Image (cartoon, rainbow, N blue to C red):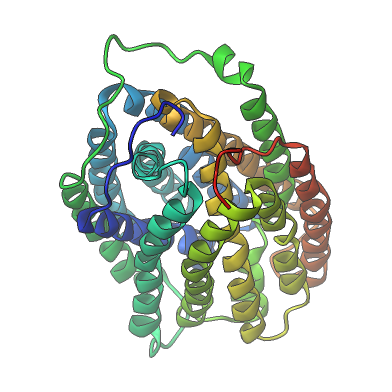
Length: 404
């Protein structure tokens, strides 16, 4: 590790905590757009809800990451998960787009409290020699919780009939709420490295942007996120509107995504220790163009399942590459802050991309104008493919002393 400290030994509580955290995170990620459609949100409202979720999920992370670096990771994770559990319980009974936006933001802010602290906690268990392998293993097991959530969603909605409504999502949101409280308990049973302590420091943005490697990563991540998120307002109108996918079919596509993500993170964790971080990150970003192309031309729900499986591979590569790269370049006392800065760049750009596209398209793309929506998705594919290569400008962070 950067400061020569020995890594902590993984425990069963650590793996279970990761898995239980991914249940609510996956449910809110996978069904926010679908819930918006179910309660009658238009394209602009859907763009605002999805963008607001991304903004609330990431912008507060810099603040909470700095707090975690000072007072410790476990405290802030537990607080965030408890608050997320309460907000998810309220979300289960939402009825209007405005209320949905408010509660989705509340849930996302609570998740933002825990996210950088969890990433930093994983860093305590990841030694320099096999950092990618260890991070891939921990995150792979954690994603099993999300996979289990999607399988559960598939089972409990398989025989549902009639139009999709908010009631269709209530059991899933209550499951997400319960999982938050379970994760808070499990986190309390894990070990963590002692925090920096001392007097609380104000966040020094100058120091963050003074790190050339971090600055370059943030700029490229922001540019990619801005372009990639222009597709966000449209996915649900393809799945629910054009293809008429039911909740269990959406859950099946999410399960395919997560299954390949679980396997992929273990594979990419080992690859990243051999070939470096940069090639895997570039692969993960450029390949994301495939999803918007398939959504644009999809005529059957099984095509969505297939492309979501491929996207799971891309997301596995990104999860391993991004977290390993940031932990490589961050001083150990600032890992949560660096991870939070990375996620904030992505989240702010996702909000802007989603909101701008939703606003611009409001006047000329109706929710049933699937030809126009397909053109917008193809535009995003070009942005994802071209901007993804910008990650080649990053310096490779793989330690030169690392054994092959």
